[in-house]
Image (cartoon, rainbow, N blue to C red):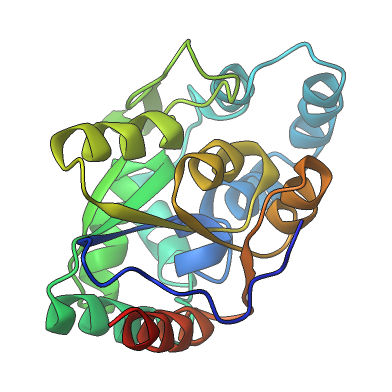
Length: 231
């Protein structure tokens, strides 16, 4: 493993930036924080079973949150407490100004991402799992699972990045993430990975290169320098 501080980004390949949402684009993990507040004991019990291999990432989420009773107004009040990374807007602006496709890849839920965009007055493309309400009750469906990948998530980031690469063979794909469970396969599929929190040691264990970061401003700085170096 090498922690890359000043990677060169090839100038002759179009960039595409894929970014995790929970704990990366946002400060808090939406689903985890919500579960800690509403069903803390159930979360602890199911997480132990997940760690023992009884669940995949997606079946764990279904066991934890499918059928959750939470009125929409209460969910909205909770979502208003979710903060974005200090440079989240700057990253969106940077990609727009540079003509770089940007997409959130989330193993969270489309309903929450739509509301959070409205709350923070931003817009971004995204791929995520599906949440719909029946009365006050959550009903969940996976966004894009991938049985060929070992991640077991509802929205496999390896598959999503690979699909972009198939449609854009010359693309230099960048993945930004923080979690071992849902971000590892995306980081491995990307040409360049930015990692923090549990994702960084997971890449260390596999001997894979990555760029460490603390906030998304670090990502912007590295991308800017890397593109200049590649010209």
